[in-house]
Length: 333
Image 1: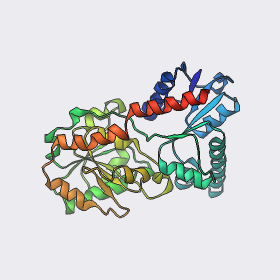
Image 2: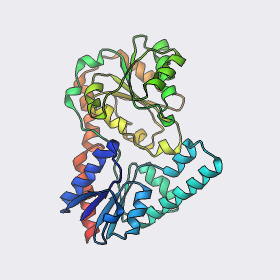
Image 3: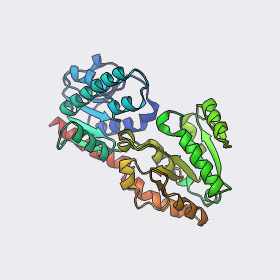
Image 4: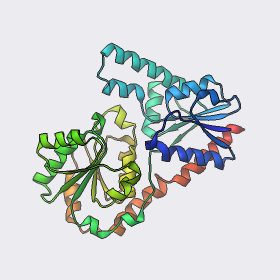
């Protein structure tokens, strides 16, 4: 049996996990979602989604272990954990040990980016990692009703997310302020976030006006498809270099022109030839393209054509289902 080991509800990655489920079913497997490692048997193929769960699954000695590497947990701890330095260092080494264990013992590795695979090979002296699939994080399909001309007539800007440090919310507010004051005076900002008080505090601190809303994540796509631009800003560090934020697929799928940091390794390459996008350097080099785009008459059909190539290739659910299905079939031989 193919068992998906997910001890906790993880709404943000449901779309991704269901791709794995469909791939296993296509490979002829009976699929069962489990919350405890005690449900794993020796003849099972098990899919685990983080190092702790992967380790628990490995101890049960299943027939095969498929492991998904969501991020670089040791480096995340180092960057964002504000506790005692010695504690953070110990946690870093503990997570790195688990990371190495998974890389050396899993039978199939699922990475979210080519940059992530390269990072692991270099860090753990694994060259090359052999049995793997690279599938970016994404959580939506392309909604063709989101590409209508009217939305591209007004410079409406969107930020969707929380105020956690890695989301760079203060930097986004400052960037919008710069855009409105020096480039596009008609610019309007709307923020979808559950952190309303912290959002309001930051807006007041920087003297920026914006509407704040919160909707359940299942209703977010319907809300945001009215916007022309969306912010996806990240700092230049290894955590962000290897990531593929789901927010990008959400923006593109809803016809929103992304303003994004090109420090996100794979995005820099994948979106190089996407016309309706605004990649920014570490010091926001590239804003001139935003100004040029905002002067143009933009057709919804042209944006749709531009983004369709991304959904046909990079965010193609069927492609990954088929690819992972083939890998699972190979595991059973």
